[in-house]
Length: 240
Ligand code: NI
Image (cartoon, rainbow, N blue to C red):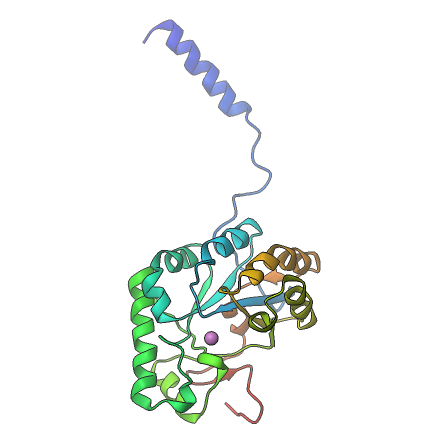
């Protein structure tokens, strides 16, 4: 080794030692948040992955926010790389049927096949099996609940909606979403509504400024002791 090279190494070593230690450890993909101790809220996006899912994932990542995606099997099949990214980046994944039929008007065989095909597509795309079911339109009955139980899945609905599919307007989506915000809220949104994705940076910033930790549905329902086939939050007139 030449003396010249040795002295370069020595300089490099000093530079490494002299570099200041990072103030905080690098964030892990999945942080443990205890929702009994801090304010939590779960943003949920139905019907995707849509063509805007990549942009939405970028926004969530930038703001260190987690969400839950209730996916349609048909789009999992056509956009598997988004599903892979969702899982890798610590988001929750749920089953929202394969082709979005009203389960309360479908026969048992159809419901089973819609759930199974979607579970299979998600497994193939991202290597995980979803543990939660959100039936299309949030519509459920005893038969849907029994079949969800066969698959070992609780049914997860929402506590409030952004009504984004109806307004398709950034300002209205922000306003409606903030009007249903509360501790442990599960908020319904759609990643195929472009204006929802456009509204997301402002919504996330406002929520975080108000002390909310944006977590997955799993974090919210952890303490609910839901059994397969149970619904949460309970639709009016239902008992688990
Ligand atoms: Ni839907």
